[in-house]
Amino acid sequence: MIRSVLALALVLGVAVPAAAEYPDRPVTAIVGYPAGGLADLVLRATVEGMKKKFPKGIAVVNRPGAGGSIGASEMSQAKPDGYTFGLTPLSTLVIHPQMNDLPYKTPDDYTPIINVVSYYPLLVVRQDAPWKTAQEFIAAAKAAPGKLRVGTPGEGTSSHLNLEELKRVAGVDLIHVPFAGWAESSPALLGGHIEALVAQPGEAKPQMDAKRMRALGLFQPKRSPFFADVPTWKEAGHDVANGVWFLLMAPKGMPPEAVKFLHDAARAAIEDAPFAAFTRARAIEADLRPGEVLRADLWREFRAHTEILKRLGMLKK
Image 1 (cartoon, rainbow, N blue to C red):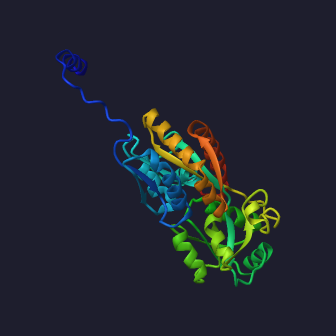
Image 2 (image 1 turned 90 degrees about the vertical axis):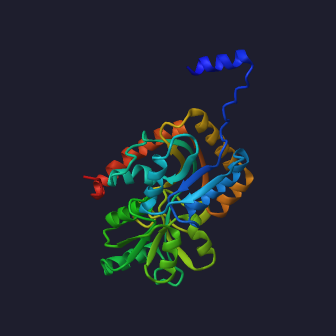
Image 3 (image 1 turned 135 degrees about the horizontal axis):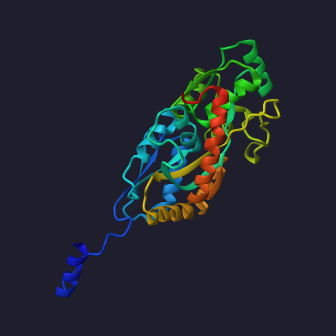
């Protein structure tokens, strides 16, 4: 029918409107954490570099809560037309669906676009805390079981998993206090409502530079060039190291041309000088991986975390 109408229009010399070229309207970018946290800042820095390719604009929308899974759930259920995407941590995609009933179950239930950055969290305390080393903190935890409170960005995050693994391998009883993100957890630590915090490097570094916080141990296989004086937890006798990725994702079934457009725009933004300056200032590293590589990586991490969650008794029944 459509072909017949088009053919008739051509015969009669009637002008046929051209199909709209993507993107022809504003795009929404969702992040599952509050404004001001590292996930929010990384998305906004990426979007800033992408805007030149999106003449109608990109609006960043914060949907905080449940360790990022509220935002990821909304994103995964959006119309797959190229006008909704967002930034999500690895843990939200490979840990949360194995702990909770979510709209997305596996890495085949959404479209990975590109990985943006990667990093490893660290354990920080207030600058005036009595513990100067990781060993002193663990000794204090053993001396007072169930007394020291440690914050994370939420249940089922990589930071939470690092904390649970540390409790297991060090044989200590620490109280886990989940927050919606850095905007909540940082004031809690500085205000004395918790004793320690598993923090993202880009969030903790400004506080460390200002002498408000001190890092005791890094959840990384080897020392970071950004924190050369901070030992790894392995050096402290407790081999715990679970890293974090931030990636751009979109709903399943998005047209390939829209996926490519988003990928190429994001890649150009991440490779640009302003983004490089942004990552250096926040002690994180760009880690570009296209969608097809990323999906295989996500499946590998999904299966690896199945075993970790089983070991910790956190796997969904």
